[in-house]
Image (cartoon, rainbow, N blue to C red; front, side):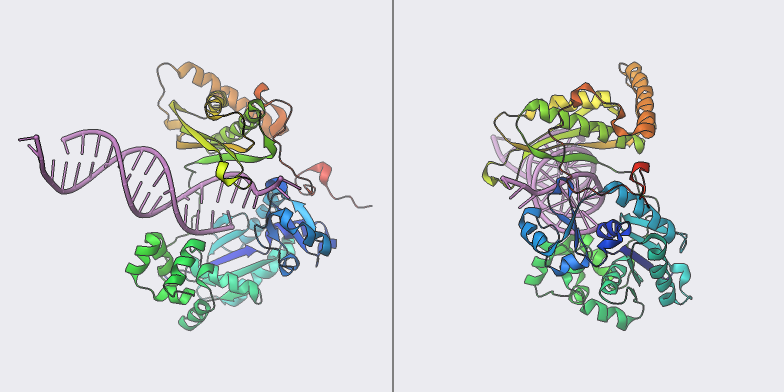
Length: 419
DNA sequence: TCTGGGGTCCTAGGACCC
DNA sequence: TCTGGGGTCCTAGGACCC
């Protein structure tokens, strides 16, 4: 069967979300910052035009921001998540088979649409999504996911939609695409490839299989086959359960005291355990890490981690918080200015396949029903409603979010008021 | 002074076993 | 005393993605 994919990608997604409920921002430069207001993770076209780079540390562009009146936002994932849901809802009208690839991108299976006018179909999506949600998109259509990515990228630079079907169209698109802009080719590979004279996506598609496998592993070979039009990546309709779950944050300011760090790690662990239960998994092991900033003094960068194996896989906060704090105390050394801690749970197994141990069965049952109650409470009243004493009240670790916009679509008190 | 958070997959190398 | 190869499992590190 001939495959055909559309990639629909929201333009400057976070910046566009901020604009939907604040139309005075249309035409204005906008940047959205990472957690802790650390660096730039989204830019409007006007901000890009000012030369503000992706990932730029905020302190480096502060002058530029001031000089050009750039509007600055802390990231508001509650708002972006809800806007993403709305976009996806519209897209699902256009195909029964949809893969939500990320918060701002979806692949649509169009292999049943081979005989419709694809340009028109793409155009319809391109018009409808912003009309329904306020979010502008670009639509790229091609026989493989990797080519659809390229089509999308070129669509963004052009009229918003691009269909790549016949050989000549595809070759032309590959010639117009730098190898670094191919999905699956990052900075390291791009540099390596440049050393062999491979500059464009077209060059890469012409490389021999053995060359590609040697330098880019079999993952890279799959990418190259996709560039040649051979579909190797199927749509993932239901996301597979995660194999690891990580919860971590940088602190708002460096911390030196163990008790302050314990508060942070306890909070992360509670979050992590609740993600674990949400996908009905239990963890066999977890890793706790603690580190200083990689930037301020690279030679004295302290990074330690400790991995703990559990006797019985668990998703209980009572178990995980207690053991995570033990691990933290083991790797904590006084005298450092710490910047970040976190927990990664791994060795995940489905909760209903956990082997009961003779000695722990009683507490497990008790924990399970307690966790159910907690999850219910948090669902109803918000995540902060129930806390452990060790999470404390000082919150010295809390992130900076100095330019947060309202949660227009998910909180009653943030509804837009019209006078 | 100030630099995100959350994932996946592959490979190489060592330990261990037969 | 010296001598072998193949398989599996685990981990660390490195690449990638958004």
